[in-house]
Amino acid sequence: MSVILIDHLPWMCALVATLAALELLRRLRLAERERHALSLDNNRIALSLDLALSVGRIGNWQFERSETSLIWSDEVFAIHHRDRRRGQPALHEAICYYHPDDRLKVRDAVQRSLDQGEDFDFHARIVTDLGEMRDVLVRGTCRYGRDGTTIGVLGFIIDLGPATNQATV
Image (cartoon, rainbow, N blue to C red; front, top):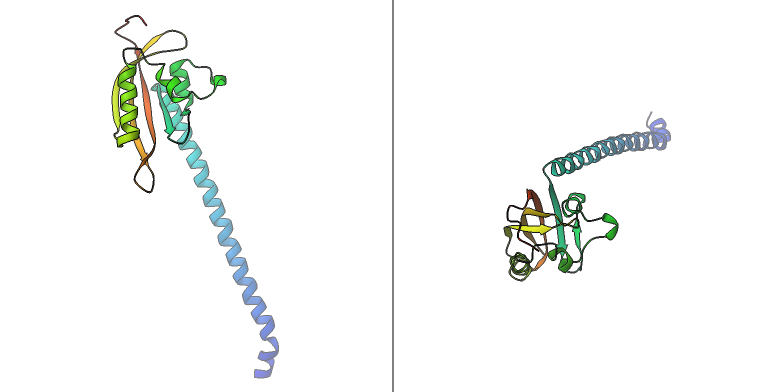
C-alpha cells in the first residue's frame, strides 16, 4: 500500500500545488475587483468634490517651493476668469491678480508661510482678467518635508462675490 502512495506522491503534490495556485488566482481576482471598485469610488468622490466646489465657487491651489508656478484647479481659473490655455501662473503673476492695496498682505502671508511654516487665512480683493473686482477668502496650509522644512503650501480660495469696496485699480 505504501508503495502505491509513493508512486502517486508526485501527482498528489502537483494536485495540491494546482489547487493552491487556483486559490491564489481566485484571491488575486477578488483583490483586483475590490481595487477597481475602490478606484471607481475614489473617482466618484473626486467628481462629487469638484462639483461641490464649483457650486460653492471654491477652488483649490498649491505651490511647491521647488517650482515657479502654482497649480490651480479649474475653479480657480474660473474665479479669476483666466483662460486655461494661458497655463498655470507663476507665483508673482498670481499675486498680481490681487488688488494693489491687498498685494502686500498676500505677499507677506505667503512669505511667512514659506519661511516660518505659518498657515494663513485672509480676505482680499482680486481683479479678474475681465476687470471685475471680487472679494475672496484665501486659506493656505504648509506642507513639510521629512526634515521639517516647508516644501510648499496648499489651500483654497472662495469667491465671495463682487467686491463691496470698489476702489479703483
